[in-house]
Image (tube, rainbow, N blue to C red; front, top):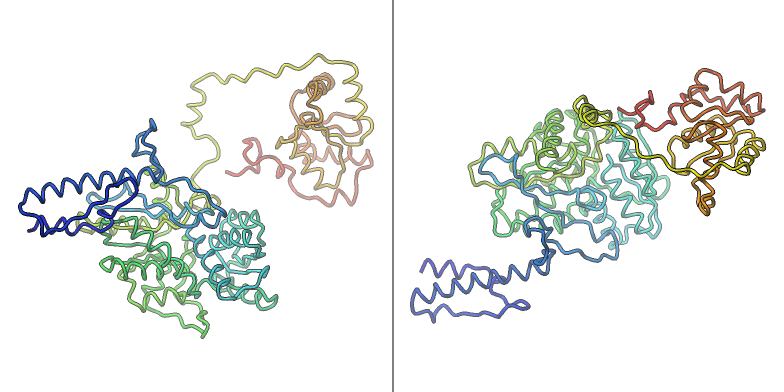
Length: 566
């Protein structure tokens, strides 16, 4: 009877008919012997194998490929009408090397969202909810306070849907975040870091009130939790399938992920224990000192125990209403604490051992999850949220030990083989007509820059000349207009015959050749370029009162640039 029970416990989806699979129905009362059950079990095993094949065919597994199935992405490549339908459905990836022995740890990699973080879900959910409930008008400006990821997600959603977006962000958050938002067409208003997250919120509220903008209120908006209850939670449950899930681990920022996923797990996987992570030097939940709220859910006063921490996007200087809701509902089974330094170490270790690129946030969650997993019995399983990609942190302490220059070991590798240059371009013969053209252009213009169209060194001299207010003539010898009959290279050959130099840019003032980009920067710093420009009648407003270092315009990767990024 025990074996029959095992058969009858098979989920309905295993025996339901699917395309190209023979329908299969049975009645256990007709079995007269154990051999019938064995036969049935064999047929069910065959059916499951056939079902698996169908699923693989409907997914992305190509049975005819020379690549092994285990390294193929099982997901199908789908057509999308909008980037917004690519939000969610992020993978659960098993930790292969860093998990304690006997513990199954799965990482919910939210960097697979289109803008690289879990906040893409929040952004889409809040705007969808606002549209559905008439809370936002067509073309209305959206304004929100964000440490970056919510702002980036909202910038994407607003770009697609046609809403102008303004993000209020403390200037202490990584520079790449503000650049990403501006690249997406958003405006970024920077606040004093000393005013903390609460200062960002106050500024966003004031802007919304002053200009009539839509304020999503991510920290108390139920749509934030709703989108995770609709997507993130069910995705985890579906991905785990028949595997048990003992623990779910996430940090809290707004509390949307925590509350929404917890609602899902309590309903569909009630045995799963929910662990929330906060910074060890800002243990707001651990303190049991509550935040008081206004009627609209916004906080009244900052939390007394908040301190600056390395975990960007975590633990603002108040406990968000959504986090408090989750605690009050009994969704939080355990509070864990992450150190910023350990978060950075774990993020780097995860990249170098598992090939998974996450930021300080993911490193923080994973570091405490691994430590906690070491205390669990073998056979336990855990899902950990990795909130974003490591590219959000290039200008933060996460990358402070990653050099831009070659290390001693890399230099030794470089020097282990000859440093042979590529063969030079064969230039055409120099003609007098082309030499005359070079001299004519230099004579007719006070300043001439002979250039390559997409050369960073050429852009350097353009930057300097624009900064000091000097107009100039540019000849891009590789431009499309000079391509026919190799005309550009004819000019190049003639130019080389005049200056004896084959690199670019080549900089002329009043017909005199002054060198290239670095030469111009050095001459400016020594005070030698100014009198030459003044003699040519090019000094205006004291060269725009420029008092900077011209090397700021050189490529930052250039090892000779004294201002380069390390």
